[in-house]
Length: 260
Image (cartoon, rainbow, N blue to C red; front, side, top):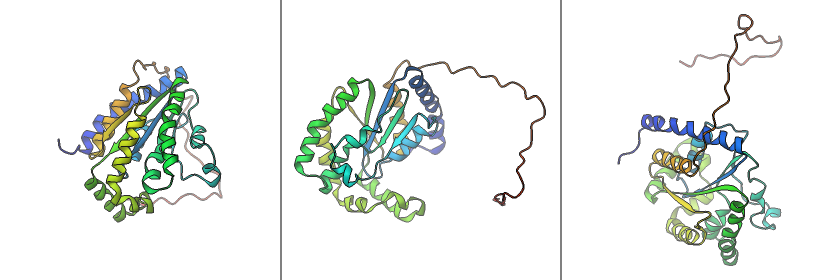
């Protein structure tokens, strides 16, 4: 199967966006809460997949959580504590761009946690997630993967493209040669935390456009019967001619430029 072309991707994404809007409308109507976790390889395309979902949704009830490393105070708290504040209220969708699974991935591989902290995380995580599900949260976990060769191509692109330099960190550079270490840590994580109440779904992101579509389709398929008819809206005629935009004097305008 060849790489998906942009035109074909855009055509396939459009009906999925309609369904995503339907899902958001259903969440608002029913008061349901949804959490989606995105984990995976560096450069796999977590951010792009999240943008493909959020780009067509109302940001007032769809939130992306991408936490930085814990503060000194947060490091002294119960490990899951800083994530709890970001869980959804009624009608909300929360997407975690990396999550508490940092402990099973980068922290484990880079030595940022002890073996005992890692062991306890793998033991406690299924219990914590069952509490979320038992409380009624719709909970989904995706692990996005790509081959090391593809990862290297994307790292090189990030180095060369000024618009993407922010995507590469010192941790990313240090992790480049640890692909197999991350594989072992991932497999240990999956074995301990793949459960009936909170299963993982694995997404091939060697072709990121294809992977985004596959992920969104899978997510939509997990929640059935979400159709809520949108509120009927009619635009009455204006009472007169449309007004021109006028501004008070003394406030500078941005200069119009020729972009041809």
